Image 1: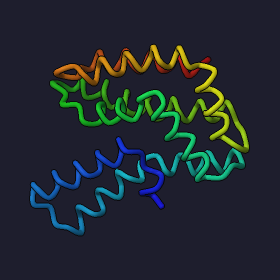
Image 2: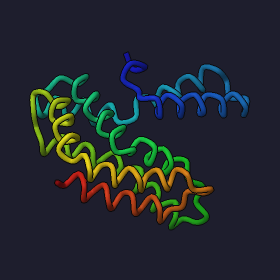
Image 3: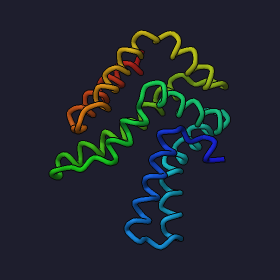
Length: 166
């Protein structure tokens, strides 16, 4: 079931995590648990919100992942999580950004409470098409850069906050 809900970006990241753990010689039973925790990231928040809003957890999860995929926030969140900080300030910044990339989607879905959150996201994506295209170009420039920087991720988060507030 979890595998069905994970988007390609998240699946690739779990595969990479699994390979890194194998490379480091982590015991298989521990590696499996670590990968599972990564896969379940956000599930508690989504389940809690679904209960609060009275909507189906699977539909809310689909809407959440669809929104992340449409905007490229899955990539941005993974980039923030994987960022190699040079000091504690960059570490704090990127940890906060990773959390923001998740929280922005949750807040969007909560504001637009609906029994059919997937339809809400579909409609919003259609309405915001040109703005989303412009935002995606920013994300794609960051993805294509030789090195992702904390300011790049911060700018993406700022623009996402504005876009998701529409």
